[in-house]
Amino acid sequence: MLVRHVVLTGAPGAGKTTLLQAAADAGLATSPEVARDLLKVPGGMALRADDPLAFADAMLTAHLREFDRFADYREPVVFDRGFPDVAGFLDVAGLAVPRSIDEACRQVRYNGLILRAPAWEEIYRSDSERIQDFAEAVESDAAVTAAWRRYGYTIEDLPLAPVAERLAFLLDRI
Image: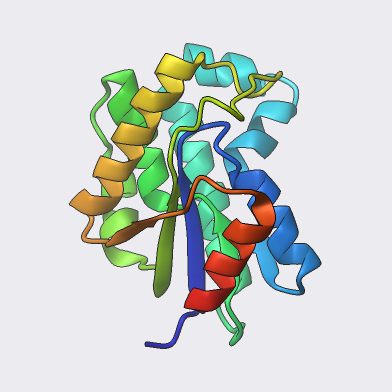
């Protein structure tokens, strides 16, 4: 199978961004976590808290933009999260997944690997954008993993290992 996309999903604070940076340092094309970028703009945290559906729409738009940015790229691209993560975010919030998000998850498909970073308490840290406690991170992990499976993807767990080992794991699969 031609691996064009590698998507890192899973728990908040489980090392996805660190692995993404290691992949970039190794010369792979990468796409950042769009939610984190949205949370950093003025009003981003309030939007997430006050209108999670609008925040989900903003995440979808950003994911579509990132996906399209690499449409003609022939080498593997590593994405920090993807469309089903938006559905998982809404599932955790107890909200229905709007048709636009559901259709994107069904019709705009990643071709490659979906690698899950399981909740890992030993490395978990909250920060200004990662506001969940560890129990909420575990709940988020379960929701996004279920969403990826619901949309027909096979998920492989990253090892609970140092970043160099995780990068080797990723590179061995592409």
